[in-house]
Image 1 (cartoon, rainbow over the protein chains, first blue to last red):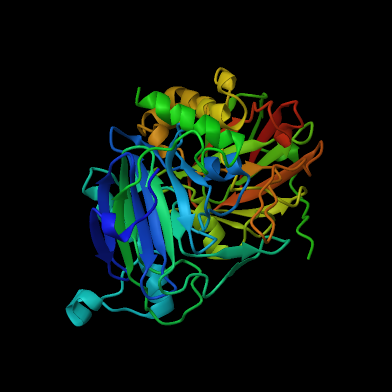
Image 2 (cartoon, rainbow over the protein chains, first blue to last red; image 1 turned 90 degrees about the vertical axis):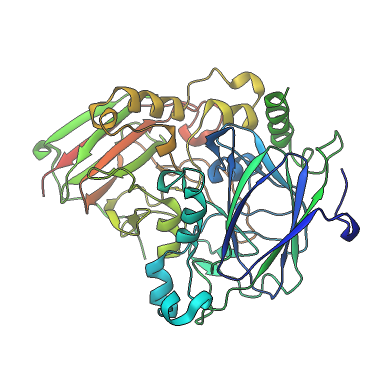
Length: 241
Length: 218
């Protein structure tokens, strides 16, 4: 596997804070996701473009790896028992996948209203509508909008299960490296996290930098992180034989 | 504050009372205002449950909305079960167990290959029960529901503690024979249940058992 190298970037895309993006990421390609301003949240979902009913599965991802968050060594499972992508590098340390996405009513209640008529492209956007706009480009809709990953965000529970948002989890320049182990339709929104403690709407921009990482080899960190991941990679590899 | 709250309802007055055997699916409609009880007959039985709006099944139970809107991981008395549209679908009004999971999802043949062994694929699973119910139950077939409609579910009576450092485990159940959870429907809902057949972890105490479903008019 090839690690990130500034000189080997295939393409870059900046997603302005609040905005949304989607694209087909080929197997073996990795994305460095960089929080450009600090405090970013990148809500992400993964679909198999060959069979879009196969998609990221939050519960399967968590229970296979006995974790309630994602970081280096963790992989994202589809509902078909396959590794869709893996976290091969991470300067943040904790990425949420249990708190879902904001919607229009939540954003308005928290930050007020700013529409295109008055604010042009500075309008307030929310995660749900952003992801639905992107999903609709591929014939997908509400039925496909499942529990997502929130890169850069951290939420911790107390013993009773009460959740607290951890401000400052991601600093400007923080990154997470995600290798795609299947061909993946990636859908993202950089709108604020549902539990973000900031009272003003100021979502940070995120940069995607693609490079050719290659496939997980026998000594791969994510493959060997737990026995479950070893089997998940076998399922993925069989799919492409 | 204790979340253990007993119900005053008498099973003799229930308008529906059915037993769902271990490993079976169950599907029915519950009307707005009706009270729906799941009774753990023999104890430590995970009941994998999804809810859909009867009027429009694209509106369905959302684990992430339920967690984020209440900033709470576990479900018990007072918890509102939210839809993906941010609407309350049901409210838990009685609970003699005290904690229910909505992170652990449902077992599937495919996830069993990852979690336990590639050879475990033939074992019966919740998702197979869900698929069977969607193919056979009247309240699903005319709504054209499929795997596309299976999202992160509730596991009633299942104990999946999460620690502050992000550890997650499938702990021994905290349920026992006769424990129940009861909820009031805030809209007309379709209930989809798999009475979990998982034999590979302690969620059913390695011995799946029947549960009883009851409905009362308000």
